[in-house]
Image (cartoon, rainbow over all chains, first blue to last red; front, top):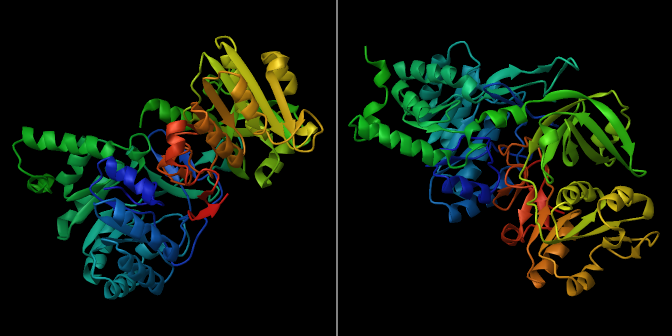
Length: 286
Length: 272
């Protein structure tokens, strides 16, 4: 599925992603009121990754409900609406409106590393995380996915908190908090100074997080972080993910979903498996 | 990611080596940058004004390790850039986007304002191989008609037509006005345009009427420049990645938005 934050504003862009072979789409994160995001630069390329601090721009849920409704008439794969807020009430209000507009599931962004008083500041705080999940739980019957931050000492503890509070699935992981400085001007490059690192650079970290969580958590884990080819996908399934999200790799190839699916199918056939389920968590064999 | 994408998208800091004043509001900046010096007409770069902003700019010329962009002072970032002197440090990412095709037949190039910059670059590349080239440039007033000397060097004077809204140079009208006469008279096989979107829309409608192919360079709010953030969508296209040059067929697909609406900083659609 498409990871949150990528090309996710308009029904037309979701349609392109669906044509590229995605099995589901997670929208950019929306909030109760519109947000304009940060001044450029909002991305910095590194050797094997991409650093971003876009700043969660979004038109606000009231305007976005129109886009959700329109999208649902154009595509026939699940549309997962990613939401963020500053209080439990923000999250539940947005979740309720997204559900009413036709969202097939809700992903809670409690892990954005570059916007203050939301995102990771919530995902790092078990008490706040519990309160938000519990309150959202009362406003929607749709599956509730919690996207976890890797910027914590122990991701498994927070995964357990999310499960205890009522999450149906977990996405692991959001971007890693990071920094880029230009040596010539001696300045941080991003206007927000710090951002989130994605792309191949973070794949081993994401894979380790999924593996750790899968050791103790029994609800579905969606693997996310630097996946760009079918080998990466297989590794996440072996670590314990039952689905995967792709973000940064979409920039160069919108058909990356198809390419990966084909590669995974071939792998399963050659190894005589009938479905992905049979390989989920295999790397945990002792 | 492919290696060339990583190289192009990696920020390079470089010094401004020359600044040319083109009009009371437009200056051309030249930098040394190997990657952008290989850009094709119609491609763009992202220019970092350290500590201030990063903006997309059409490439105005590229050769021999050098690249030039023409910048009109219209916002905070561009006004700040206008205070820079040669030797100042800026950052460059790119080149990005698809660029124009290079038609070898009879081309008509129509520009408005700073949209003249990429079309001048295109004209330089077309002239050695094209059968014929007509350049029509429009501006508000005489002092804002850009690159007239350069155009005279590149094209024959009889093939350059200028218009100003106040009549201080060339014909007193919008740049679209003399086109009907030209299209009736001359057998063009390709139209290229860059300029305000209202102008592009009018020219698109004209070329549809005359059943002529067109390539237009479009502009949208741009953030990442590499097709990820979704800020520059028009219809199903990403201007930074699928454009900025769009063909007649593509323009037909986005005609509900062309010259009508774009996405604002918060992703909501706003009128142009």
